[in-house]
Image 1 (cartoon, rainbow, N blue to C red):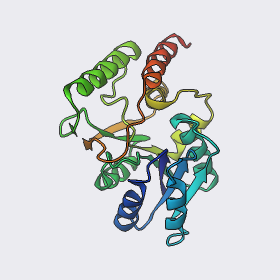
Image 2: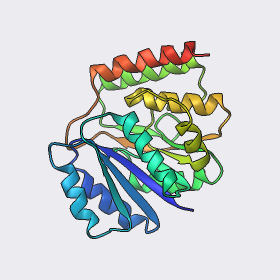
Image 3: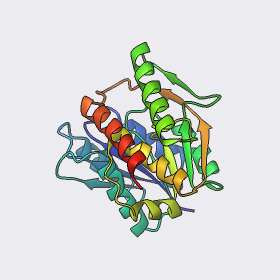
Image 4: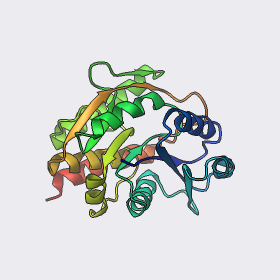
Length: 233
């Protein structure tokens, strides 16, 4: 079974090499693909220098400009299918996702189409958020789960393992969502089309270096896309 970890990046020079080293050392049979949106801080250059040491394990797709999270995953998924990977793991570059949880996702992926590291089930938690961040996140999740009738608890989780079967299905759909909305739409499509989903508990640690990419535009698009998904036949 071939596993590919996909890491979208934009200005993650402070974090990316630490993360790559952790993955490479902990999982000798796992491959990594970085998708960089022309980061002005030199993220791509750092990754390419790292690839010199691990040319058969780490790869990079460089994009001409900042095109967004959903676009990055779609391009990465297309690449993964062409290269023959059996599973694709989506992961953030800011060290909020724990490398040690990759093994739990890999184990769950043997039985489920989508395995996700969940902050919202027993054993899951979030470290480093203030009260307002917890409130806005819980409100967004609660509202989207209610509107779309979703069973999954952590519907905005970005740390997931997808089976090839589900990736092929996603690539056959015209998904235009980005950011948090991408996470919602993929879960919505999985539940609506009877793909199996399993949540495994995780400890999410807020980024310690660099700046969050979350913006008002992301929040607005999130709610617009939830409504569109509800109205879509």
